[in-house]
Length: 351
Image (tube, rainbow, N blue to C red; front, side, top):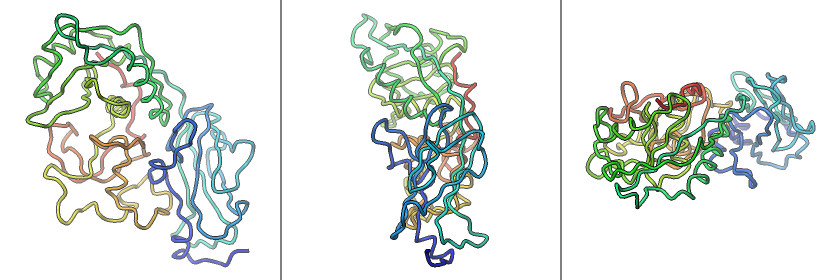
C-alpha cells in the first residue's frame, strides 16, 4: 500500500498528460496518431497514457470510465497500467479518470481525467485544381504529391474522424496570372477570386487550388488560405497546412504564441498553464510544472504558421486575431476558438 499523499505531493508525484500536453510528442509508432486525443472515430481505437513517477506497479494504476460507457470501452477489458487502449463503440461524449491505489485526494483537487468525444466517421470529398502557365507547363504541384498530401491531412484529422478523398480527376487551370497572388487578404482581390470563381462545386466538395505564391504584403507569405470559395495552397504546402485550412473551413480560429510585434517583454505567455487558460483541457491540472502556455500553443493544429497537430476540446488562451478572427485583423490576447467545440463539419465545403 502506498503512503497517503497530500494533493501537493500528488501534483509532482504523477504527471497526467492531457490531450494537449501529451499528443505533441506521444505518438503511437505504427500510425502516428496522437495519444490522449480529444476525439476519435467510432469503430476505432485510441491510446491514453499517463506518466507515473515512483516505484508503482502497473496494476496499481487503474482507469475508470466516469461517463460514456455506452460510447467507449477498454480494449480486451484491460483498464490497468500507465497506458490503455480505448475503443470507440458509438458516437458520444466520454470521461476517463486515473487512480493509483493508496491515493488520498481531497477537494478541490481531483484525480487526473480525460474528456473527449467519439465521432461518426466522415468522408470529405475534395476537388483538386493545379495551376499551370498559360502554355500548360510548370504546374504548381506534381500530380504524384496529391495522394500523400490528402493521406497525411487525414491522419491529422483522425482526431475529428475526418477522411479526405479526392473527388474526380485532377484538373488544371492554365493561367500564368493565377500562379502568383498578392494582397491575398483583400476580400475583393480580382486575381485570386477570378481563380476561385473559375470553378464551382456547389457545396459538393472542398476545392483545393495549388499555386506558386500567396503573398499578403512585403515578405509576408502564406502556405495556405481558406475562403468560402475554396482553399488556396502553395505547391510546397504540407499535410499539416491542409488540415489546418480544413479546420478553418469548419469554423476554428488561428492562435499564436506571439503578437504582431513579436514577443513582448515580459512575455505574457511565458507562464505555467492554468485552468483559466485551458478551461476544457485542464484534466485536473496534472501538467509538467515546467510547462508554459506558449509551449502548449506550439502544439496546436490551429497555431498560425506552426507545426503542431493537436486539436484540443475548447478554447486556448493566446494571441488571436481581433474581431471576427480574420487574418487581416490585428492580434490581441484572448481565448481563441481552436478546439472541437467550435468545429462544424457541415461547413466543410466550397461554393
